[in-house]
Image 1 (cartoon, rainbow, N blue to C red):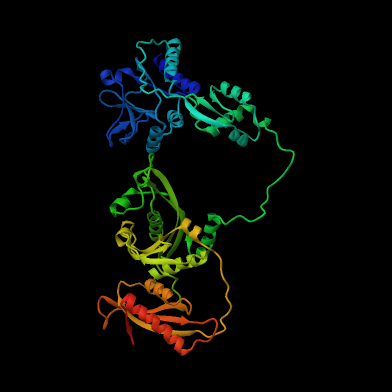
Image 2 (cartoon, rainbow, N blue to C red; image 1 turned 90 degrees about the vertical axis):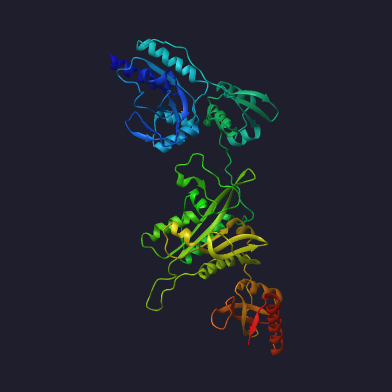
Length: 556
């Protein structure tokens, strides 16, 4: 007889959940220590045994229904073993609540619990239906299971949920449905759905949506409700089949731009990777890194290791590199198109990025030549190929001062930094268990795309001979080849066709704070053959610029 009553109480709760969409929980009233029911959180690490007999470790964000001393139920998800209704239960305490969707979803995900109750709460329940469901369940138990109601209802509802006000515009209704429905018919449809039209104007109106309609949150949802009742079958198809065509080809979009760059990288031996935008906030803290804006933290994070949206592509890519290196894939050439995220001035922002990862041997060992380990210049060359491919010109290169890199360079376009490349710091590589040098580049895809001019100018084969002149300079160690190249372009634009750095020396007979550069210049006049006097005049002008602007010593 007691087993029948126990099973029937469970069936009543299931019936109420199905009939009204409102989960209920029944407690053994004799197990409620202190005669108090408190909804609160417990300290992180607290242990709690659920109805399935498993002991679970709680987070400090897990909402709990407790008595005066301990937890009795993981709110909205799963009951506790000790306070659950048993065959010997004589008194039942019924609880009906409306819990936050975010809290329940986060708790259910963490504990890997998917119950009927959590399914309902994660999708939203009616905050004004809790008392009705409670009364109906109590009456059914008294009527059909021989129970008796022994207390009044305690209703705690400090901030009643107001009806949502949604503005609906006629043009959007007509556009989304594809047909003009008379306003009078729309008002009738919404009224039947308990959605009231409260402010009508000529071309728009405001509706009041009751709290239990958790699926109607925006204008498009209201339009969907109108169409659902009006009937999809009542939307006529046009008798005229037509299509739009473009008189001109559209401008190149960023997707085709990325596809073009991806094809070029793949042809150069790079493999594309896709990584998660979620990353571990500990990386940023451990290496004292700072980025533009604030990190975007996840409200409903699956784990601490995926707590924020990334502000750099580096760490998610290093995880892929470490995975491959641990499986004896030592030579990696990887790239990824992705996004970085941050919060600035109160708004959330995301930006497109292209990341390159290079480590190991440049090419596999063979009988014709010795294997060569990749260097910074191999990565720089690939970045240069990307810039050439996009037609981006007038870039400036400066020394990179970034805690993620041992050394490297930053590229600027019209004074704005759009790329950084260099050797990743050993401390960061060690964190990922990477024991070999790894080079990394990150480029702003959007700026690269917007600033690019992918037009190639074909020139005639020169009719007059080129002239090669070499110069050896002793310079301060901090002077870069990019600075020399910029100075040459500013000093002599017309005759200097190309500049190459073919030797760098530091050591004996050179001061410790100096270095020697051997630079080759190719001179060409497209209109006539250069004379010795013109060549000498050009080279003297360049050497004077080196001495005056860079403090160089010309080695004879």
